[in-house]
Length: 338
Image (cartoon, rainbow, N blue to C red; front, side, top):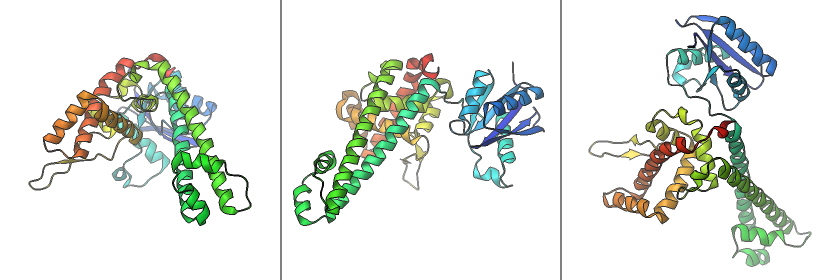
C-alpha cells in the first residue's frame, strides 16, 4: 500500500521530534517522544492514526538507529534523510523546523536513501570503528615515542635512535624499571603500543572471519583484504540504496569534480562522500597498480596520455568504484542484514 502521510523525524540522544504532513504539504500534527521502546510505540500509533505513514529520519545511523530498527521490524517504510542544508535554515532552526524539512523532502519526491541496515553489517561497522580507534591511539603513541627519543639524554638516544616503529616499541617495552623519568615514560609508551597492536590484530582476525563467512567472494578480488572488504560492505549498505553507478561513485568520493579554467580542462579531487570508503578504494587501487597486470597496464596508458600520477590514480579509483558497484549486489546476501 502506498503511504499517505510523510513523517519527518529530527533525532537526538534523549528525545525525537516528529512532524506529519499530508499529501499536499499541510502540517497535520507534531509529536515529541523519548528514545525508548515505549516512545517508539507511541510514535508509530500516532502516525498510523493519521494515515499510512512513511518516515524520513535524520541521523538514521546514530541517534535514530534504534527507531529505524523498530520501524523496520514493524514493516513501515523508512528512509534515511540528511541534515538540513545551510540555505534551508535561513528562516531559523528548531527541532520542529528540521523535522518538517525532512518530511517535505520525502513529500517532494527527493531520492532519499534506504537505511544501511543492521545485523552482520552493523557488526562489521563496530569492528571497523574499534580498529580505527586503536590504530589512531597506536599511531599517537608511536609519535610520542619518537618525540621522547629525540629529546632523551645522549646515552638513551644513541642506543635507540636506529630503531623505529614497532621495533622501537618492543625494545623500550623491555627496558628494566628505572627511577629515571625518561626511561619510565619510554617503557610505558612501548607497552601501550604493544597492547594496542594486539587489539588491532585481534580486531582484524574477527573482521577476516566475519567477511569470510558472509562475503567470501569479495576476498577473492585482487587487492581486497578483510579490512577493505568490510569497509566496502559497511559503506555500500543495502545494494538497493545505490540507484546508479554515479551514485556509488559520489558516495565513494571518486566522481570527478570539474576544475577547468581558461584553456585548461581538468578535474580535481572530490573531497565529499564517505572518506572511509574512499580510503578502502585507494588502498585497493595502490595494490592493483603495483601487482595487477591489467590495472598496471591501464595506469601506464593514462600516464602516456598525459595524466599526472595523481590523476591516473583517481581514474583507477573511479574504475574500481564502477567495478564494485556491479559486484556488491552479486555478493551481498540476506544474512548480512539479519
